[in-house]
Length: 324
Image 1 (cartoon, rainbow, N blue to C red):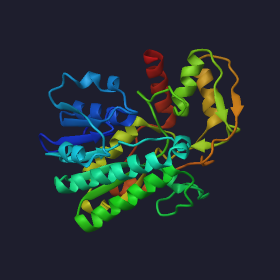
Image 2: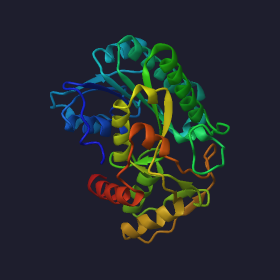
Image 3: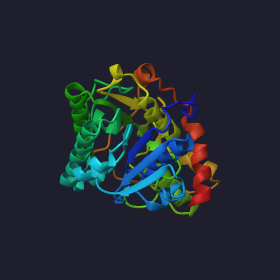
Image 4: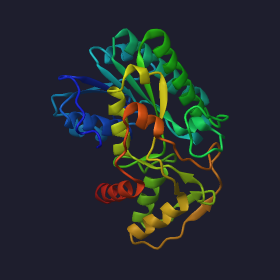
């Protein structure tokens, strides 16, 4: 069913933090297309202005350049807001190992500022980005909420802290919070550039240029790759979820499992190139296998993802061919 049929009160205002990023800009676009108002907050440290330029002429769209590490900025951004979709964070496990203090300030303190501002400004629902990295070294598949292992990176720790803070805000302050544990999201506008780019856009970019991509490890690691439209659906359904479902974190994925090496050869076939990969060392802090049990999100949020990996990768390839 997706999300386009969902109905919110007339003139609903959504605040999307990190709205110029990959997931954030897709959320802004979806909400504007549904006819609701969007306020985008982004400091453009990892988000890109060109991701949101297309909305500038839309009277329902407002952009604030600001940083969630500043509480005053968060307070102003939350004025009159009905729903907060808090996507502002720095991603990347390897980068977090190099910058642990920054990750704490940005991903934990920044989210706490947003929780507090949302509470003070009377926001109805606070939906925030968590991550499958919170499962750490727990080997059991599929990953099920409540069965987590030892955390393996500062990034994972920040997301776990966000979940605990959000739970407390629901428990003590009555703010309805919903954590989205994303599993390897991919799709349009995900950047292929930079040392910490996600694997699918990076592979596509290099293969389109006729260059040899590097696979970290043996390529036999598996991931529950999740197309962006499934993530949009989850966020919007969380905004309509009952208060009984608040204070919880939810696996947001398709519930499938793809091996990196298979994805690689699938891309070479789709792009009609014959390039063998280079194999590099394993990435520190990475988990080997990831696959989500999405039954809790289905049951409590009504989440029912439309796009399988095969559906999503076709759409992603088409987008990158036109936009790279």
